[in-house]
Image 1 (cartoon, rainbow, N blue to C red):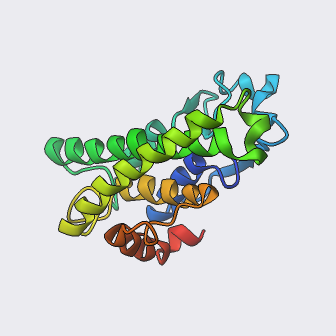
Image 2: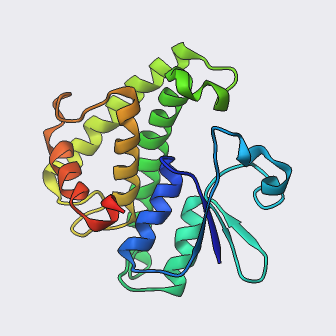
Length: 205
């Protein structure tokens, strides 16, 4: 199988961390240069029509896109260590946490960075700086919620490490581009969790 990724982009990093956590090896990694707009090429759009990374090309030629779908597929092939829930109830609560982080934490970060960072102007035309700045406030609102969650439980979805922690960590690391530092903003539980996450081998891969 081939996994199309892009260095430093948060969604490909989510998949790569997921693979490391599950000790899945043997995929052919193909880097897509976003700055060179390789994701907009006809050849890549034939695999990922919406021009997004990551994308997983299966051995039969079919292509699976969307981070969560790719991780679900790999979890099915490699059930252990379990990162997405062992039964219907746990799966639902882990997915709830993961979706909250994805939609209300990662998305505002991405919008803020894409619409305010000069280096990303080629990828986001037109940029709307005021919109980007407003998304920065939404990020802080969600960070306050996430900090409160991590004050009462060790991990984003509860008592154990899951895919939701991967999503939150990749989002928080991407927020460095908007100069967001959880500890400096008073989110000390979030910062402590981030520092623990940064020590995991998957965070260093």
